[in-house]
Length: 315
Ligand SMILES: [Mg+2]
Image (cartoon, rainbow, N blue to C red):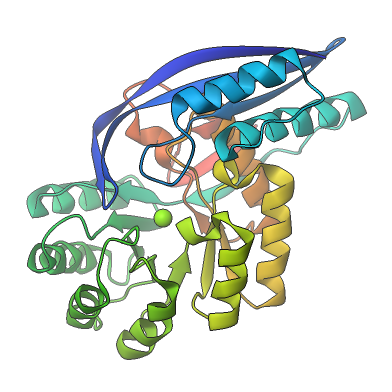
């Protein structure tokens, strides 16, 4: 088996501001594994601040794996990319092909200024997205309340509005903001605070459902969330969870607990987006997934991951 690694940089149209900081570009390692005439592709692109390895660590881990393919990388991004490439290689060797299909995706809005939030939400609705996810908890609570209200006024009864706090609120801030907007139609809020033991009370108090995302990266944390009944939705990111098979395992655990599953990209490049799209089609074909992120890049990503009318298409 021959492993090739190639680095590339993708540039965001405008900085994405989350509770973990501001992101303007993505450094990606594209992986190809070849065996005879068969090839599989994967991608690793750790993002600072999300509890992953650094880019250099991922690169070192993948270089070691390229020298010694028997020894899979252990750090999350590198492992996810390697496992994805290997799964697609196996698939290619079997001669299987996946049928054409499409999946609904949401638009991601991370603008800080309320006027930009308004403009971006209008754009998303006009472009046909069935859901908008707004990043919150990177501004003062008063500003966030205003940002959410402006977004909700536009999305109400038309498309779903989702919020993502990336654990950036204290329990007080979370209940302050979410109580103020509890009358709006909000599909879910991801990771309202750092500690999942707050989440159930926040949801009971505000009637807004909770999504777990960053907390799904370790098995102990997952057990803890299930025990607390802290989340109604699991947002699964195959590119940091260890690849397709770990994602499937986690999805079936979620199903056992009646928890909805959404698949999300991690501001991924085209290869990881494609793999996430295939998993979304496999695991939750009727949900709206966090896979509309190709539109956020200046770089033109391939057609089969670029949203058209709020969907991406497997050709
Ligand atoms: Mg999230």
